[in-house]
Image (cartoon, rainbow, N blue to C red; front, side, top):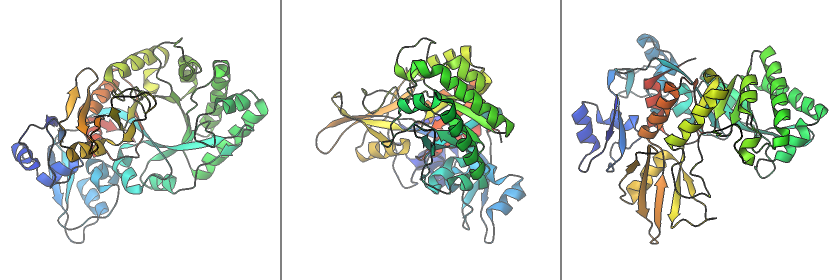
Length: 424
């Protein structure tokens, strides 16, 4: 397995021929149209299949997997373009084994909204241990507010992926409301009401735990947040379930700012079964153009985190998105959030050349819109995600947590499946 950077004059056909890979398979492994063109500077995952099976009339995916000595999850993991479906057709090529296969164990979580399309979730589900459903809220009396009903939890369970209930203090506008945190966490009766309703809901839905995403916690509520998390973890532990806590990307214990001051890394890490470092959003909607998750900043957060929290509890946050900024940058003018495969489509539409920033280990490109406006896009590709995965592995972290799995990124999921062992 290797990463190839496209040069001028390259085509999918020429690259497939150079590496001895079927063109259709090379396109599928990178989420590309086999008939499409490539961009200079674009990164391709070159994965050598050791065993490829052509579907025969009457075959079923289950029978193929069983004959090959694979589980359905393993087969889906090697073929994420199947989207965790059992639908196949004669002549379709399935990869049963790759030459390269990682052995380092990783635990992987992915966040999703209840309305995620099954075909998009299907690309990642075989690489996920848990799916964190965003989000349940609560009112100032401690009453749980569920999201819209969906079949995502059942669909994921059928594919051997457990679902986590994400609890977040969101208001009617979907904004984080720290007044609700104060009102509930500082009142024992309200806190117990929320705990009781949480436990009832995860039991009803058959979920495997709770993921706390309390952002902008007031400093004066920091201790109450730890107490609430400890009470919740004790209840969950008695049920054989787990507690994960999302943490702001701190680089020191006394880091100033409302996002950081209410998150006590050491205390929250001690009570949680796992924590997610929210190592993304350096480049954000209202900020200046830059990488969403520059590797040097991600490293600073992770290296601080392991001084406060056992590394075997830490999941490194992975951003599955990019931003498109209009230039010149004007404060208050928002960037457009886009998917990583969408970024390449935009670059192709305008004939852009992909650049790569070595310091942040992140791709970007410029283009001119039909109205004459200049744009810059920062996004993720197999090079940038491989750098962050390697960082997590080098530091001995437990694994990864994706915000979010709402957008396609087949290249990422196949690289992850081949580089690391996704523990059940």
